[in-house]
Amino acid sequence: DFIMYSMKDLLSWWEVPAIAHFFSLFKSCFSLTDFTIEELEEALLTDGENDASTAFTSKLLMELLQGCYNNSNISVTNYHETLIDIMKRRWEIEDGRVNPLSSIYSDFHSLPTQLKVQIIHRLTEYRLDAQDVDEKLSGLNPSDLRLEPLGSDRNGSKYWYFFGVRLYKETPPLHKSGKRRNGSSPSVKRNDDFTSAETSRREEETDRLSDSKWEVVCYNVNDWKQLAKKMVAGISEKEEALHQLITENFLPNLPKIVEDMENQKLQKLQAEPRRSSCRLLAKKLYEEDGGIELKREEQENVRRKEEEQEEQRRQRLEDGLLLDDDSSSGSESNTDPVSPPQRSQLKRESSSNQLHQRKDSGPKRFPSLLNRKTKSTVSTENKIKQKLQNISDHEYAVMQKTWEVLDNNPEAWPFQTPVEESYAPGYHSVIKRPMDLSTIEDKLKQQKYSSVKDFKEDITLMFNNCRLYNGPDSEYTEVANQLDELFQTTLSKNL
Image (cartoon, rainbow, N blue to C red; front, top):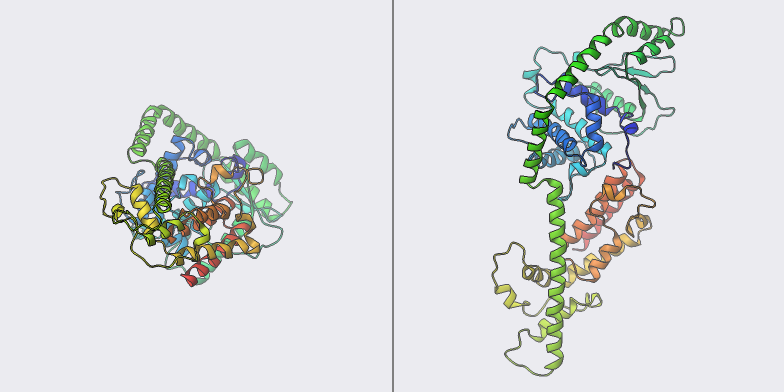
C-alpha cells in the first residue's frame, strides 16, 4: 500500500487531522500521546515498514483500546486480540462494514493506509462510548466539544481548523453521490442522549465529508496572510466574515502557536535518546512476543514445509502400498499392512477422477499411524490421518461442486487466475497470501484439503484479499461480497 498512497493522498483525508485533533483535545483527561499532524502523517505513511512508525501506530491503538475496554493491561505487544474483538463486535456487527481483520492471517500493519486511517478514526468514536467518558468529561457540554468550520467562501467551500498552524479546505462534490457510509464526522462526542434526528444529521454529515474534496490551504503563517488578502471585504458576506475572523482572531495568535510548536519540537529532539530507547524496547517486546508480521511469516513457512513433507511422505506411502498391491495380487497374507478395501481408498488420494466412485465403507485406514503417539506439535502422520480419515467422498464432491458454481459464475473472472502487478500495482505489497480459484482447483485435484474448513478458509482468504486491496467502495469488492454469499449458500445447502 506504500506504492499506492503518498503524502499527497494523506493530505486529502479529513480523518487524519480529525484523529490528531482527538488526541490533542483529550490528551489530558484520557492520558493520550501528544503529537502533531505531521508526525501522524509520517507514521501512517511508513507504518509496517519502519519500526518507529509501527511502534507509534501501535501505541495509538493501545491507548484507544485501553480506554474502550477500561483495561490498562492492554499493551503494544498484546493489543491485537482486543483489536480483532472490537472490529468484530463494533465495526462488523454494529456498523455493518466488511471486516478487514476477520482472517486469522490478517494484521493491522499490513492493511492499506487509508483503511488504517479509517480504523483509527473509528476507534476514537468507540472510545467516546466508554463508561468512563461521562465521569472524565463531566461539566462539559457535548456541543462545546464539537468541531465546526471557521467559515465558508462564496463557492460554498468550508474552512476547517483542527489545531496547530494548518488550515483545511473542504470543497463540496459537484453532484451528490446518494450513497451512504457508516462512520462519523469530525464530531468528537457521541452520547446516548443524542436524539435520533441528531444521529441522522451526523450520518448525513459523514456522507458529505467523505464525498467532499479535502486539501491543506495553509501550512504556515504566511499562507494565512495570503488567504486573508484574497478574502477582501465586499466580495461576499461569508468571505468578509471569514476574513475578519482570520485577521482578528488567528493572525495575532499564530506566531505564539508556532513558537510553542517549535519549543515542543526542540524538547522532543532533546529527549530523542530516551525516545529511541523506548522504541528499541518496543521492538524487543515485539520480537519476544513474536511480532504479528514475524509470526505470520514463520507460520506460513512452517505450513509450506509441512505440506511439502506431507506430500512427499504420502507419495512414498502410496507408491509402496500400490506396488505391494500389484506384486501380491490374489494373495491374502495376514502380514499385509493394509487390507484391499483400504488400498482402494488410498488410490482415491492419487486421482480426483475417483471422487464420486468410492463409498464410505470398509475399515479405517492406516491403523498403525493412528495408534502411533508423537510429541511433536504438528506431525506429518497426524495430517495424513486427518486427510485419509476425516474427509468423505461426499465432502470432497461438495467442495468440487461449490468450486464449479463459483468458477462458472460470469462475475468470477477477476478471481479465476492469480493477480498480476501489471494491472494491479503494489498488489503483493498489500496482499501477503494471494489466493485464486485456479490455485484452489489445483489443491482440490491434488487432495490437499484435509477438511472442509481448510477449503472455506482459502475461499474466504481470496475474497478478503479483494476487499483489502480494492477498498470497501470498489465494484470488485461488491462482486466479492456477492460471490461470497453465493459460496456460503451453495456450501451449506449441499453439505
